[in-house]
Image: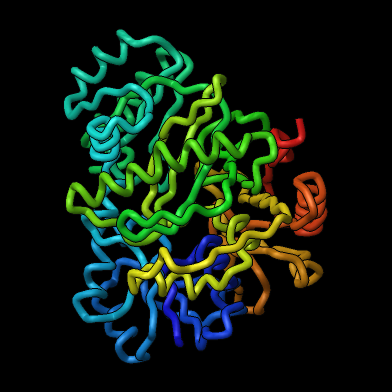
Length: 421
């Protein structure tokens, strides 16, 4: 079966890599892909928002399955576009992807169905939002309602920081129409946890839990990014807490979406906070694989990913056995200097040839006129170490990361350190 993967980052590289291991996978196409993905898949120069061209390509190549990676096309209805052409596609329809497309919708859904989350208020007028903000204790969280490439959230520890974030979103429109509404919510302290699940309606098949590192600098300092590294499993978080999150948050949310007429089929990704008393609460829901969570979760998947995707599409997800490895995985993101603000591109990357047997997922790379690897994004590479436990996997990841260099390379040095305390 030939497959078309939509997207062009580290997440899509990991998806292509996992699909390529299936004995039933034929040609894997990736649109638009990147230079690294081009090592294992056929790159298709079509952008993720060009629905007509993508559906025409899938028809022309008679692909047996389309897999959608990024959030933007899902929220804009790409799955509906493929289904209209009777092309099998894995991912939620537009009305289900709305759980990620609107934070106000997501928060209201959780409130309606009594699913644990932080207390919040929503606003579409700046003055009202500012007045409320000034009455709340610090720290506090300000979120743009719509999609903002993972950067529309500010955890403010001072009044100045909070008011500046609100003004940027609602007045300066730094995230465009994504900031037409804001959610202002209580700050939750504790351990973050990500649980991704294969979902088809009320059938929920959770994946191995992971933890992301959002801030750009060590010790969770600096601005939020798309993610600077992840690890899985989470030995310092009890299985009972993970199970409670699945039973009290993920399964009820999937059921609530069905009740609301928004049958969810695809990847439901819960971003959670474990409070000091061990209770999980919802920070966010995404409607797709996380990036870079995917880069540590899929290497631990022992089952056939293509089989799982097809089962979800065919309505037989409840009948599939899904096995996970006991090994640990740690992903260290190598980022361009300046990320998540402005950064240069086209800088030569050295050391990749020595890491050819390692698990290195390309997020922002290209080949120059001399066929040399160069940087082409904020997050450049996701280096994954595998080991019998977190300590071993972490050591392997950093050993690989140290051997890859480019001007201005930046990575956190404390990925997965929380799991070793």
